[in-house]
Image (cartoon, rainbow, N blue to C red; front, side):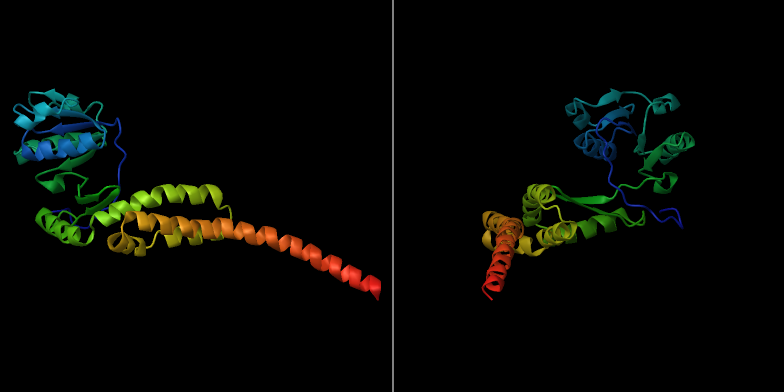
Length: 241
């Protein structure tokens, strides 16, 4: 049960090289550690006994003993994930007293950080939280979203990333740049990937960028001489009269 009256703030964290302490050696702790390792965190695990899967995580610091408050010394983030709520509560109390963000497996209200259910499709990550009301409900919603957020979305984001950088570098007018980025960010490209394939969508996106950049440049360069010709013609005509 989540703490009443808390409006949780959703956020994504860059944990590259950040020291994180995980207290617990069971399946729940192992699942959290795998995600932290994937995010590049500097993980230390403290537990008297460890699941076999921990031994395959070579870059994790393993301390086979009970929790000590001194373990919090360098931690920027703490996960209390034992199967003993009283131990988790003690870890959380010590961490929160030091101002360290803390996630608690049980009871979750003892911490000040919730970890959402996450749906990943390449660069796309959708985080889902019920505010601590029900982890099972968050998982059920994630499974529902999996049906609509297919691999076409990750393909779309991969195409968009490089083209966005190109637009930012070549389109200097803020209004045109914003309009073009909005056009490139529409869901219609996902539908095109599903219907015609990724390469067809890539060509169409490139064509749109070319029309906006090269087309504008051509119109600008051809318009200027025309003004000159018009002025010369008018001057010649006035001379005859």
